[in-house]
Amino acid sequence: MAKATFQRVGQLKDKLNAIPLSIRDQMSDALAGSAADLVALQKRLAPNIDDGGELETSIRWDWAGRNSDSSGLREGRSADIAAKGEMYLAVNVTAGNKRAWYARFFEFGTRPFTNKGRFAGTHNPGIRAQPYFYPAYRAKKKSIKSRLAAAARKGIKAFAK
Image 1 (cartoon, one colour):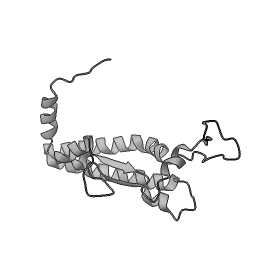
Image 2: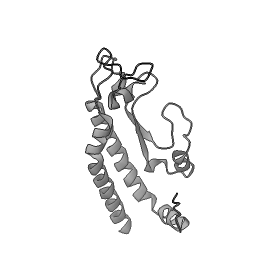
Image 3: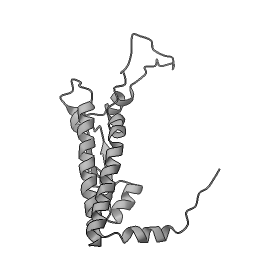
Image 4: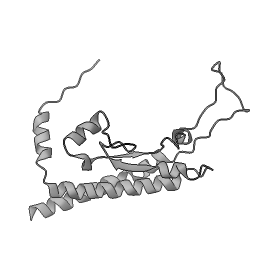
C-alpha cells in the first residue's frame, strides 16, 4: 500500500491565508452565482414525476460546513473549513431530503431483485435511470471554472492597484 506525504503544507496554508479578503469576496460571489446556475439547471433536468414538486424543491446549494437540514456543522472536511472561517470558499449541492428520499433512485435507477438475489424479471421493472444531477454538473463544470478564474483575476487586478 502506497502512502503519500505532503511536505511544506504549513507554508501553503500560510500563503492561502495571505490572500486578501477582497479577492476572497470576489471568488465567493462567483461561487454563489455558479452554484445558483447549477441548481437551476439541475431543477430543469429533474424528471417530472407526480410528487407535488418535492424532487425539484429538494435540489439546493448551501455553503460548505453547514448542514442544510439543521444549523449544526457537518463532520470531516466541511467542519475543518467552517472552523477556519472559510465557509464562503466552498459549497455543497444536494438533492433529496426526508420528503424526497428517492432522488438517487431517479439519478441512477434501480434494478429489482427477488429476495433470493436473482433478477426479478419484467413483472417488476424498477425505476429507469433519469439522470439530472451529474449531467448538469458536467455541463456546467467548465463555465464554473472559468467564472472562478475570472473572479480571481479581477480581484487580483483590483488589489494590485
